Image 1 (tube, rainbow, N blue to C red):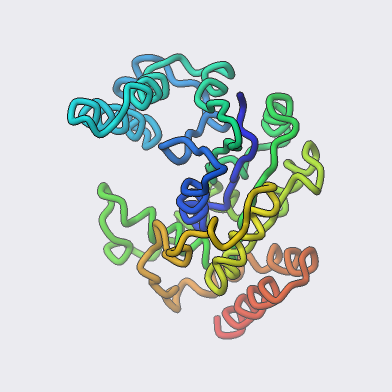
Image 2: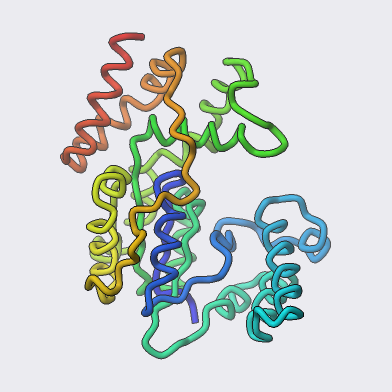
Length: 292
């Protein structure tokens, strides 16, 4: 069966937190690997599945190796290994993707992949054809803070090292890259999804609420999915940060640059949502511009 829900993003807006907390809910089944990237990537050849260097393919091979070792030690089942083999080595197709989500009585299935938010309307139309009743979860974060957090993550990766090792021009180039910008273009992304999914199928949450009251945000998401949101269904460590950065503040020399990039969009976001979160985003952007 195809998943009952998709968490589509945004990148660096709490999707790992969402995956970890939903994964432990008794009425939810999630893949053992976050971010399958089937719906937004072209199917890789068998050679790429074996030797490809993208993070998604390397993760699939790593998961398979781990499951093979775990089976030998008695820490994983044959079913776990079969899933890992199918996920890593089988030919990608709609049937392949559907086969990754088991039908389990009393449980809903889902996938969380922040790359999905930025798919265009045609790609979303295909998703709708496959799973027209799916529910969509989209977590939003201040575009300025999200962009900086993404940059820190990008330059922290092993092949790069640390963001403070790079020249300002290199960092600005990353911040201005189309791939970076599209992840934070929430309203454009939402238009693509709203063309095919009804408003009551889309949940929009805010990273600010995750920071201030993670239990409330998780309860709201569980209610949206029609799942048990009682105290027993909320993990005790729901407030624990997942895949979080080190909270590096935005250096002064990048604040006005980022504000100029995102100010117009933040104005539109505040007009669209008119809540305390977007109001604060706008105030921050305008403060950066005033001191730029």
